[in-house]
Image (tube, rainbow, N blue to C red; front, top):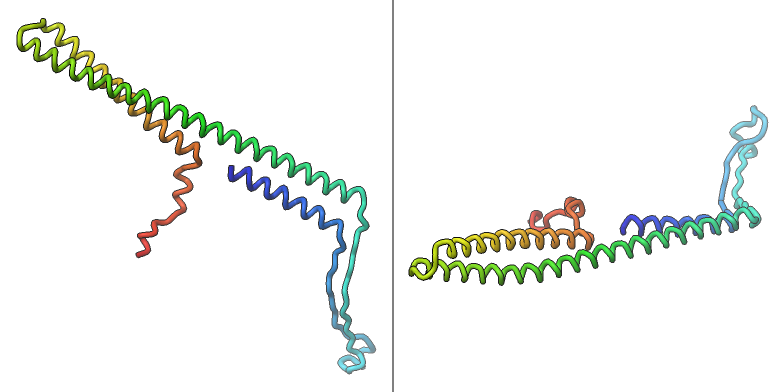
Length: 187
């Protein structure tokens, strides 16, 4: 977005430059010299000086006005590109927020499922130790708990990745922080 904004600023500045060509160019100038015979060189009568304005004005023509219109069209194109960049950035943020919210909801559900699997595994272990259920039932509950733990870990990793994507979509990045100094380091 910063790049698109800078391109837009440059395009609008070019309009001012092109418009300035429609107005007169005023300069002040001066000169000092000597004129006369070589034998009289250095005498006060040979000294000459001049000072005055120089005004040049190209009468406004179709070419100058066409350049102004062309730069205005370039600025309009830069504005459209800037608008497109902003909309794209908003879409990226919206997508990242949506994905983060969905994966966060999924994480909470998986945490509940993992807690239920943990309770079921502990209960099956007690029932097996009490001789009320076969070992296969306890082993199956342990397998379900291990699967729930693995699924939960994957969901936590996905939420972390979603946070990173959201941070980047909001304009964060490591290259921006590289130029900054630590304010506590100067103390």
